[in-house]
Amino acid sequence: MTSDFATSSDSSVSSGSNNQFVFYVFESLIVIGVFAAGAFALTLEDQKTVIYAAFGLVSLLLLLILNRKSLDNFNQKTKQLENQKKAGLYTYLSNSTGGDDVEAINLIRSRAIQYSQELVDDYKKTRQNSRNFYYVFQISTIVLSSLTPILVLLDKVDVSIPAIKWLPVIFPAIAAIVTSISTSFPLQETWVSANTAVELLEAEQEKFILGVTADYRFYDLGDDPQLQKQKVLQSVESFMNQVNQIHLKQVQQVKPDKKQENTQETSERNS
Image 1 (tube, rainbow, N blue to C red):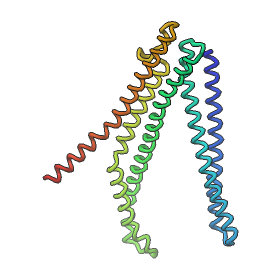
Image 2: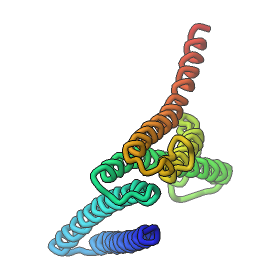
Image 3: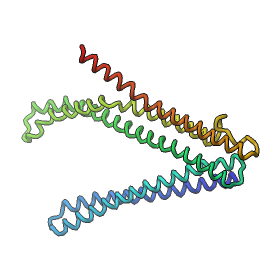
Image 4: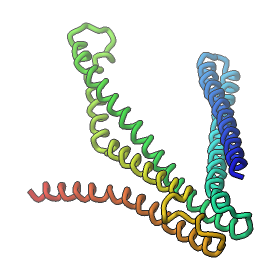
């Protein structure tokens, strides 16, 4: 029975990966087509042909949006099936033969796992966005700051293009704006905080799925279905409480920082 579960799980993962690969390949071809159609439209002089090229470009953009939407729906369904299989481990660990009680328990566990997985996905997205923006701002600041001394030398060179003379003014201004944005938003702190939340939530989810702690262990209670059902409900309640505590702890970390900033601003005004 366990081997069948593992085989079905591996086959579903491989098929899901293949379908995602098809979506990504199709999306890449559409993006290439969009750039090719745009470049082709810019080189045309016939007005009717330009209209046809613009129509084809719009069609490719709509096809790209539909493909992205289909990919998101496919990923959501894949996650739901994965959560149901994780919840179905109860049947194998408790040696249950099935029935309405087992289906109800699997549904409850699946909903709890889905809730925690949604939080994990949200924190992963926050972690990725914060990390990417942090690196982009830091690299941009370094590059722009390094180019500023070189651009200053352009004032001493006779250049026939007037726009080039504005570069020593534009680049330092952009560098100052980028530096101000990177220091105004706590991107690195948000990245680290989201990564901590992901690690804690994933660890707690694995404990709940496998039942490796006393709060989540339910499959060694004997053959009494009522006792097992009661223990499962208690484990779900304990799991939800732990997940909410981790989530609320991460949310509440932002409030003290805001309070400190408001206190500093008030003290500066009073002084």
